[in-house]
Image (cartoon, rainbow over all chains, first blue to last red):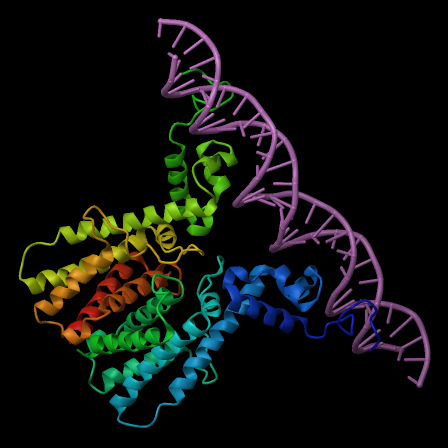
Length: 213
Length: 213
DNA sequence: TGTACATCAGTGAACGCGCGTTCACTGATGTAC
DNA sequence: TGTACATCAGTGAACGCGCGTTCACTGATGTAC
């Protein structure tokens, strides 16, 4: 370790530039969504020259993909926490609570972190299959898997006809996803947070009733 | 009318530049969504110098807003057509068909014209209230109004509890909006069109069952 | 323990790009008389 | 019917900006001997 003259950091080598750039990228995404993840700005915030980023990311898209992955992981973690906090009960009650946990956590994350939420669903132009559905939280299960678990139990406990089960994930997902986007991006963006939270529960009510009718 | 030398068009004056630029903007949005609505490219396509656009639009945002408005009107028109094609029947049957028409038209437009759909929901940063809900088709009623009509009739014909009526528009809207976006932008983008159409109907089934359960 | 040297992780300068926008201008139009 | 002239709707050139990316480079690190 030697002193490094004009450098603002103590060393010529940063030490953990990849993580620092990713953190800066997350900050940018948080502030302005995927479009705001600008490679030069990330290096500026870290205090490093623009081209230094290319030691750690192939290009700007690689940085944005890393940001997207981390945002997705945060979403998964948030949902995990609610899912794991569900108290014991009848299979039916637990399944209903699970569906609600996934939906509630999903929308809550979107409303709390609209920029990261949008970054999470950024689609790299060259990507074949999305990782959106495959990012898992600490439980090791993705939100989509948790949702599947809940819906399987809807059928198993007899409150949902088996004929309705196929692709039911997409129906539930659509509802909370759409509501989240209408709130953060769209015509419902003026809705106060407490009302948005209330309507979120009604969205889930509707989904639940639709499945179990 | 005199000949105009090097100009590719017959006249120095274009004649209808505003509409031509708007048409070019629509084309750009169709191809690549709101971000693709680039003022210079629009003038290029029309065959006019870049600054000529400023005779007709205050700035790039004004062009994009005009594009957004027209896309919204197209969406409204598409929904109108389905809505107006509903055959007579019991009040209940008509109401159910109306709900389905609005949802089906909404998603169909999104899948047919993903770029325009996204442009329709572009949010100008300085705009207080969105025009998304207020753009109407030939009937003079916006999609949101048509949806309201249908839901009012759900209550009036006794298939939906009045307690569920408030804000029910947002619940239905969320579901189809989310499904549309998951398909065009998101993790369901690999879904073939015929399957997407089929799932659209199931989304609407779920909404309808959720309201009438 | 010391030193040569390959490798790694940064720097500084520059590139081309395309954008939105502004300036001073000119050709065409239409209206008053 | 003809002409002067204000107004309108374009042009051409240029601006500054910030971006992603590449080049040749240098300082720091760690390993072989």
